[in-house]
Amino acid sequence: MRAVEVYDYAVVRVVPRVEREEFINAGVILSCQRTGYLEAAIELDEGRLRALDPHADVDTVQRHLRAILAICQGLPEAGPIALLPYRARFHWLTARRSSIIQTSPVHTGLCGDAASALGRVMDRMVRPLPAPRTPT
Image (cartoon, rainbow, N blue to C red; front, side, top):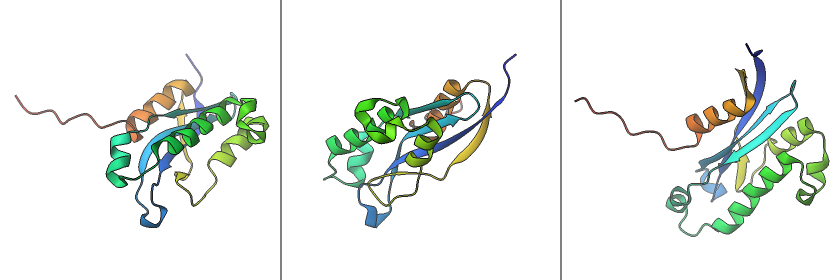
């Protein structure tokens, strides 16, 4: 039986027009301090983004979202932030900012496997909800 681990996560939001404060959830950053896990998952729904702002620069948004993935992975091409210890990267990525890419407040959970937890949080917070079942 796996030990239960504490993890922290934040939802990655795309805010195409910051002044309107409208956003869509586009990913999750998850960190488990004890195991040294830091990973992000990104799934941008371009149709929903264009519904909020038909003039959104999707290529720029995608580039910034890819940077989050690279920073989590500690890739040198992601710049000096990617070279920080993983908890410092998590805190830098989840710091409050007023830009097109923002994160939710940090939340905490319990899991037996951080990668599985990342998938569950993506299902709950980012991926489209399943259609309601109709009674037969």
